[in-house]
Image 1 (cartoon, rainbow, N blue to C red):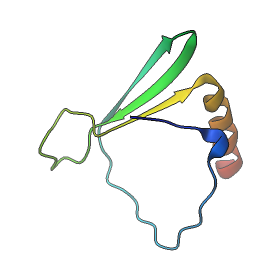
Image 2: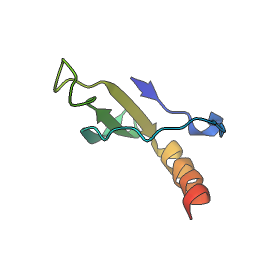
Image 3: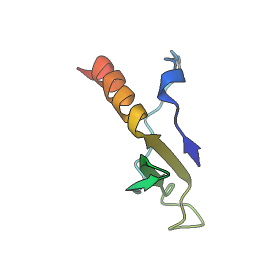
Image 4: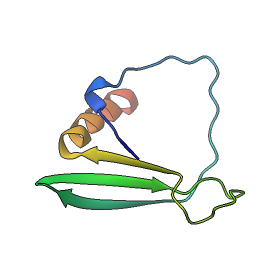
Length: 77
């Protein structure tokens, strides 16, 4: 599991990029200790042996959501 610190994210220019295969994912919104979180669980490729088990979990808190929206807007709009 990883909680993303958007403030410390830096753009990295890679020279070899590939478009990844789409995978199943779910999201959850929850509060813990007075803080709200948005969590994305991904379930890996279709050929994965342990189907239905999360392969990656990403968490973003309220402040990071705002920062991520700004970053995505800057890059896409």
